[in-house]
Image (cartoon, rainbow, N blue to C red; front, side):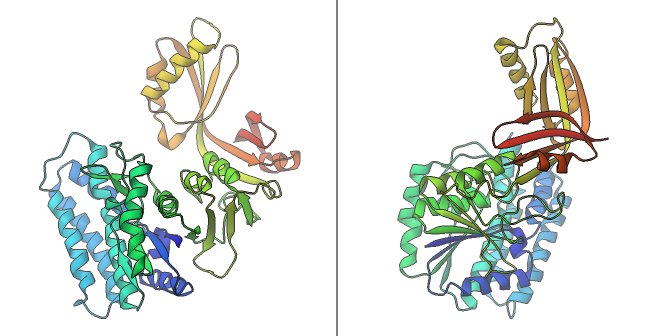
Length: 422
């Protein structure tokens, strides 16, 4: 079997869903496990629903659910000949289940409630796609990811129970291919012993990796609106180049540093079983795209650039002028954990520890508060973090032209620079 993942952009409207069917028709007779995300920006819409539920604003909650219903009805009215199609009953049932959630008492955990609600977007999208495939003549069946992917109890960032999950796929998913060519399931969601969990935002790529690992698939294809993995985000970089082939190791490095094409957790289960990963364009499905596999021979051929904007650089110094040693570092990291800080880069000197954080994810006043008793803290805002894989001086000069370098780190393969406009 092969595993395909279609994200929100690839099922954003009726024409996009028809395009998915056209792509699948190119693989007639093959066994395909299909992972589908919520349609378009539905996950963002669902997060607004969750907030309304959390504050118990019933009018807002119902209005937002109605907007979601109308959005999906517009898509279904184009895909299906009339509203007598069973897909309307199936989607209405999902929406009724969503509406019934409002009547239930809230738990004390926002993260728990988030996971119980946000996956309704994936449940709706997969109902629509699976019904459309069946009515278009495909041999297809809908599968519930919550009965397959077993996780622990960490809501919004659940960890997979690989042994149980593999057993579930082998006993419940794989046997369905005896009479069906295409099995459609949801990205992003799983379940613990009693409730729905999610694998982290943008986790549908990871779901595809889980399905492939547990079913021993031939390969995975992630269908995107780009021709493959590019060596930089065209939003920040001119003259991007497609990476025809890179290694699992390189893909993990790029995703770790912030490349957004592939979810960081996706690669590991594929690498463990040597299952190749393809990134292809749903706009041009016959094009080659990018292949991610074991060989590292092509990794160095094209330098890759990752840009993180709106960065904040904090410099933390002990008030008693003590050296930055293990004891201080342990205390500093404990305080950063209390502030829920996610570090993009760090560096220390004798008397100063510097960290770089995402400006849109950090409350500077909170950082100052947790350190104020024992440390002096200064910070610079509006900075940019540039990571270059397989750099040379020419590539560094190219990305730093007209900018001041505040801090830089280099290894043999990677250069990381914190810069600001001059």
